[in-house]
Image (spheres, rainbow, N blue to C red):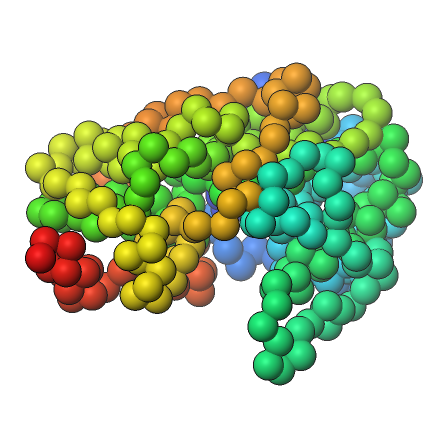
Length: 343
């Protein structure tokens, strides 16, 4: 196999490249060279996906059996369309990494691949779907952009040559968002730890290496389709996740569980101040049975936690990203909430 990874130097893109190399595949990376280092053994092609001449030059390096697109999170659909169109004649398949945000019902409804996908034309620009000032409804901007990019990949390659992957939360070594690293460092600090309840609530993070493995499976598959890429519903819990953080760090910390209504009444920011905590009924009700039937395997979340702590302790540094600063509860705010729980 010969694959082209759009991106390839950080987190999921790097995991895809490393896993493909381990299989003896030929791997080309296309990126601007601004974030992270390329794994040893790849063909590095420099360029910008928004520059037509760079895309034309990229196509001259083909052919490839498959393109795996891991770097379109901030691209407009029209840019994805331009890139996919330039590659359609020199690649057999296109694996596009999208998100569950592309569904109209996320995070309020349980989801399957037959759930409604948001509007978003394949040629939309970066402003498509922006919300007006004062809007207090669902924030569909990002989802509309990703839904448009999904349609762009299909418009260029055709439905039978495109696999669309819709992960939820991706964790693991190299994570740049900061969700799991924050919890690990908080566990390592010890003491009473504010834990968002209930502890038995199902969560569905997926390991970055398992997403990479499934993307490569789809690179060799036939036919098209979309796949929700999450851990199975009900297998992992918030309690199990936080206990794994304590175990991985060797911490003597003690979890103090706070009910959802207690946190909501105090306007704790869901998803960020206490990472992975969200009260919406559909946030962790994403059916991934179709992906599992197609070969997705999800390692235990405890293994992801332990491996990520080892990566951090061994000097691992994520690529700098502005979203990192959004995550985590300030120590003084946590202390105040803990004191209220104890009274």
